[in-house]
Image 1 (cartoon, rainbow, N blue to C red):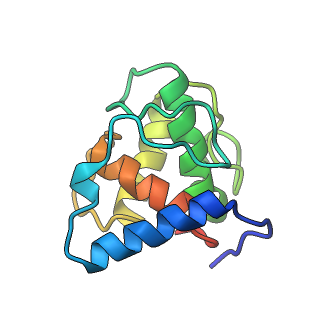
Image 2 (cartoon, rainbow, N blue to C red):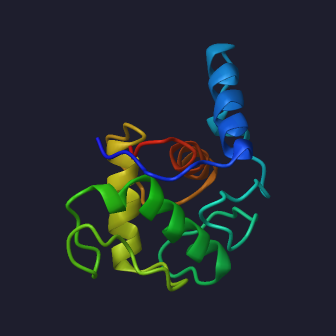
Length: 137
């Protein structure tokens, strides 16, 4: 498990703690992600978190690509067009590399058995959670 070597902002730690408290309290945090959730301190392209999928373009895709890198892709031996351990290119284009990274994240970090490759409320919530952790998923 790779450990990040930078200090996390207090806001991210508080969000992670709140998610943990709500999860223990029995609430389903995954199903209640706001459409405009706070962006991470590492990826600050946008606060908007709309449903995105193959063919989507723009700032929300850049946010997702950045979060996929910090949550999963940078720590695993992956090749999403940049070679091993280089993650995704943050270009705002949801193409085949972003689809592959999304499906891998859904399988390995969310426990999906049949990943759909769509970044909707459940995947945004999981991305937000993992980006706030001191280790990769």
